[in-house]
View 1 (cartoon, rainbow, N blue to C red):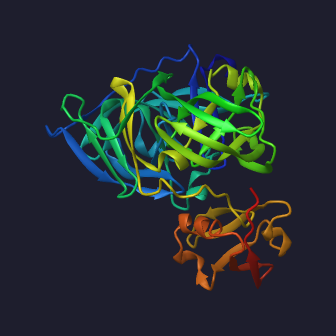
View 2 (tube, rainbow, N blue to C red; view 1 turned 45 degrees about the vertical axis):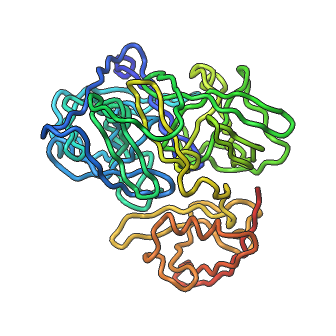
Length: 413
């Protein structure tokens, strides 16, 4: 019976991506550490960066590599590809129930333990959640095959330095003495996830100190949720936005700008902020105000030191880049192939895309006369955020015909 299964509350939302796993007391999960198998003390690996998300190859039970998103906001490891459980031959799997916030009965999933290898480091008996269905569609969002997300167990095992410019991760055994570079930012671990304080200024509200989850698996800059047990007030000017998809469907909300955001001694101006709509009890119970995402974090070189409850941040090459939203009004989804297809999944009302007659379901075949397959997914997003008034030529396939549309990008927020 379903009510006999331990339940995990799981929520996926963001303009791009956030994954949070909250475990009830009925489910016992023991954290396991990664250790180097060759006697070495540190290693550097490269990663792919798509839409601010860190994607690393891992091996599970000796098989792989499988591309996973490295995410400080995830505990335990989540496998979204439903076919992996059988092929990995995971023993002693338990049925669990995954529930969303609000009126939602949840879905069935499995909990097991696996052996995970990252570089030369291996972790045995890693708690692993297997989704029965790939409801998150990470591959379609990223534009390449993604098998899941991994976070706390890796970060807790090493001192982890992320260099976004060179797309490298250096992880060092905690017994090796190192002196991280950058400004030290203390954090608090709650349910094995790091939380820091940031200061924001918002028009009509003034200055506020926010308790924020540090979430490198969220592509946005900041998602602001609650203030004094109530939904966070919106700035005077906002636009309606689809803030992602979750177990309960699309997450609605608005997007606006905050005047400034300060973390440590570093200050950002005119930062894009998301204001999601959902039951306030879901936020209050998590005792936080906001979620700090990778559009902020990727502007630093960051060293995470979970065991000493701190991280070190140093300006990166993207630090001074402006925060921009999509100026076309298009959301895309990649259908896996072969051949793969780039489909328009949503058109924002009164956007340049709607005004020129683009429609949901159109397949984009070329941009600026360059075949769509020749663009990395992240580069497509950059084109649609390029510059207010910039012209973009989009070719689409619809009803067995090719259509060419000239978009004039418009800064809407």
